Length: 121
Length: 169
Image (tube, rainbow over all chains, first blue to last red; front, side):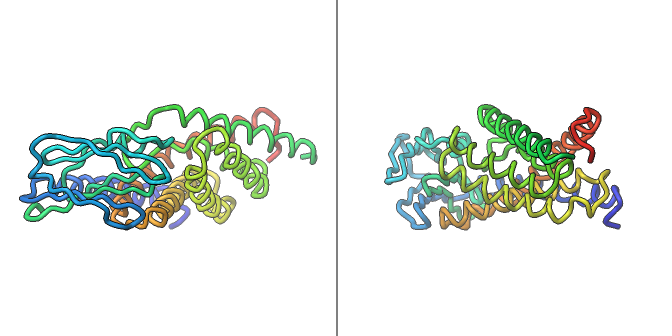
């Protein structure tokens, strides 16, 4: 069985479709929550919580550690990293997140931002 | 193959791997999630293993990782690619020569999956935030897609290297 092309093709197709499908489903499932609280984690510790639904005027703040700085933008219902002084810029390219199971990770700075929702999922 | 030819070919493949690695770093990623990228340099590791052997492939990988972090990326990028690269290398070591060569693309996919698993593991350990495990899903899907692509590229490159007469394996 392990020497058959067909076995691997089916297995990999299943992993691909399941992975992509489940991810997109989770990623979009929490988007319409009643409450949305963004949580900012540094090195596994919660450093800031922001109720995204109570934001009226969008604002930005810096998260700075000895590892570097990320500039975070908050607006009603959403949060994103707008700039970072790390080399890979993965967190900036992620764009805005707004729902459960959505996470922004800036690994070089040990920064993670996620959103907790209620009533959405 | 003579010893000097082996060394020369290993060095040449190391240079190719490093060039591809640095060049790929300049291209903005197609999928803006969790650092998903094609991993083109892994083509060279796989080709080196089939054409030269496990030791030489390990050398190509080590050179690419160390010099790659010098040319860009820095320490955190090195940790990422080192653990990912090592996981992929182990999978290749276990499977190259065991699976028939027409299934080399399978080795490539399994190596890509191992690579992504290694990177995510580092990300979780470094940030101490297991929430990012949700990325496992997209990284699995991406590993299949990129693994098939780099696997087919490897098979074509191996055929070309053999035809060129540079190798007798």
